[in-house]
Image (cartoon, rainbow, N blue to C red; front, top):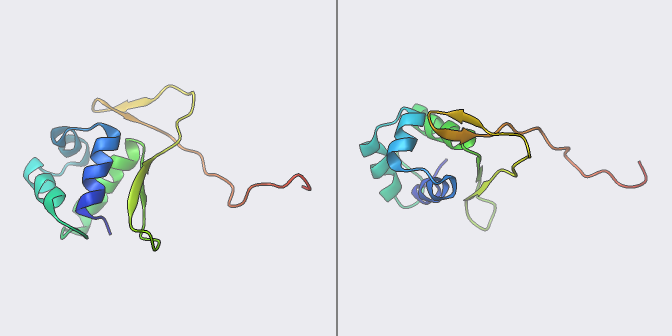
Length: 106
């Protein structure tokens, strides 16, 4: 579940205006403003939350779930490949990482 703090932080990391997030997610600006003012878990329709999460993922943001230290956000490590553009917002394609780093014994 997303928090209002995560949405504000993700938007800052991705350097998106509320209007840009609204356009890429299909969620209205007034709804984004309302969700950003919430403290803790947002109160939103599941499709609204999924649309916001998808827009941020396409913009290169990862959501970190509560892990004892609190929920958070971070940017995806960017590659040297040119970014894709979606409605004026850079999107990144990521490749899955191995679950565990390989040791030199492999």
